[in-house]
Image (cartoon, rainbow, N blue to C red; front, side):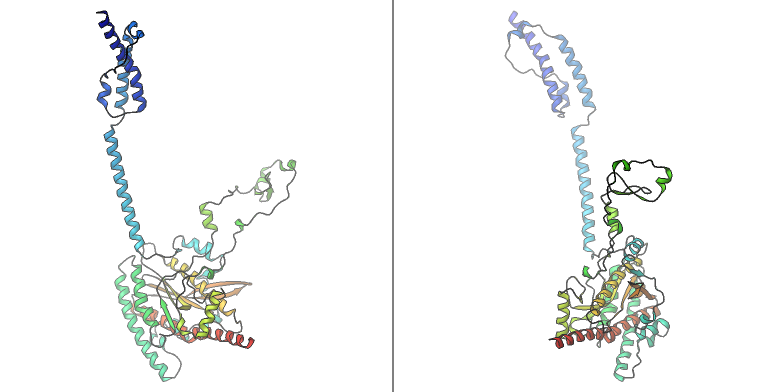
Length: 496
């Protein structure tokens, strides 16, 4: 009887002991999601009875304490969301994020399928022109009246076209009386009319398609530029491409070193007692340089600047022009040069003397004289971006001609190149040239004319202007290059 009572008392004590020992352990381990088990009384584990367990009476106060703790734990559990709900929510968020990421990936893949462009200075175009082009001595649309010596270099037919825009038939004629020349001139005039009509119709169809930049570029190259370059008298001399290849960075004008990036001059350290002085409002407002205890100059009239350049300041200090990557380029074909001329040009190219091939990946074009930057229709317009790109490409082409002229300064090497910028049906024609002003060499980009090719007369004049530039490239530009090469080769033969 007594033994049965002891076992009963011991069992009751074991239940209280289990509640005290196991429940805090469960709480520390964290919530397992099994709510109903925590609310029910756990089964006491089997254990060996000791003498102390038998002698001590049951602790009823511990049972009361267990009930209080159970209520507290149940209240705590009620404040925690269920595991299934959390898991479901997490799964839903993961699925939604996965769907979002997949959508972003699809958009990225779709964009990469579109033909990539160079680091186009379309964004912040005004800042690019003011902070990059002007410090590099490249000026766009500053000269509105060409200097007489530059105007004299224009093709005569182009001058007539610009002065007399309504006399299209005379825009493709020459002053020569040679019958053979007149025959192919009439043939060219007829080709110009046909090409202009086709291109006009294409521009009219594309005028209602905003953002159709690839189509405008494709039709401009395929319907006009390529067919003009294949005109029988020019086929062997000219070469046009629409490869969109990057040009050599060595052709870019050197960037001026920003004054903020120059190291401060070292100043002799002053005694410490001279460092501490009483400043008045007048002295603080004076814009003078003083020496601070760190022996570094400090402008007290302006706030201190951080020693490390931020991302924005780095971009502001990076005043190099964008590497040219014209949409369309027209130049002289390598096959037009003799073997001696071609070998000399390749020698200069390898020696970094004259980059007759401006492309980073060399091809069959030499000495480009016309570049085209074509843009499509967008909401805010990006014609100024095309102009900025053409300014960089034209400057590089002028530097190429300057390096060619440096090989024999006594020869009149080519001095001008042309560019065309488009935005939809708006087409502009520019001339690039270099002038010396106040002991500084400046490169200018001046506008010669503008047309809207959805109009019949404008389309004819624009195509005629390109034809005149192509003719100038064959009859004037190319012979001038050969003259420089001949002079250098002759001098080399005499010296040897």
